[in-house]
Picture 1 (cartoon, rainbow, N blue to C red):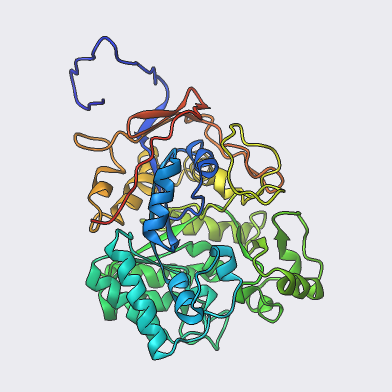
Picture 2: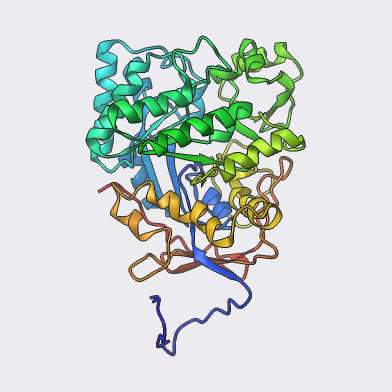
Length: 456
């Protein structure tokens, strides 16, 4: 039980935590996390996260995802959007995809739909929203040649249902002059023509060296009153399936990439040349790889990354990736985690790195502004559809007891490409729904207080 206010009467049996010299605020809300597992949640807890939501790719099926998470328990609050990609895959092939990596490396769903197929997957999405989906997650960047009219249909469905659309945009016109429509422009167009709330995922990775043009267009759209939100993460490299459309050998140059900019997550192999890239894409297109789209050591590239984070009202979101052990497993009840797990460092370090860069080193955010970017603004994305979201992202009477206590002098990321599951430091305490998950910098593996965040 907790309370906020002046002159509080503290019951004798209360646990009192000394936070002298520390910073106390609302726990971080991650609107873009793929680590729907106990192991992944624990890594994110050590990064200050209280709520981890799978909104970009979504879940297929939503009800099954909520039931599975509830059955095994989660350290953090959890929630899911309806998956556009999975619904299209089912409508096109008659079967459900085996997972998101398999989906993005598969081509059968990536063409434009027939009229019957479009009606089928729109109906599936509507059903998913009816059981509590937190919006529609659209992996448009993995099916970038599809009819733009289909995206407008998704936005119209979302507007009718009163939910946001979370989009990994298709290619920008600078990178692909033959694209059916500019990826970021498509998000703005949907906000105008459908009146939907549109969320632009990881603007840093999809915009790359054209990020200033994209941010300018999004800023103009917001000044015009459109419901457009944007997120970024503080890394110059991303992660995806090596069979993704935009990683085809003939497409790399337009994105300013070479095969050597791709690194296989499980083995650490840096792709030597085009022939090796083609070989892996044929053998196993779902192979997870790191993609170095900006060089953080380069002054100009690093400045672009910082501008994406500093953009007014830009939300911090991790795009946290699955954990994979050498035996192929994706889950572990052990803590500390068993050695050998592979993932992107952002899974463990996104929020601590953002605080280190933007508050302590760059001094572009105040401590209060950092909480606004990591806690308050992401929770507000869901205000219109989810009563539970309104109690998150702030401290006050009636708010949830999701609280992070951090050390302003030591908060930093420690995860690296070679040691991607090394937890962040500086998170001294973390309470999820009032339950201590991290105490004095140590995670308690015996508690699973996470609750579902559902629409309605």
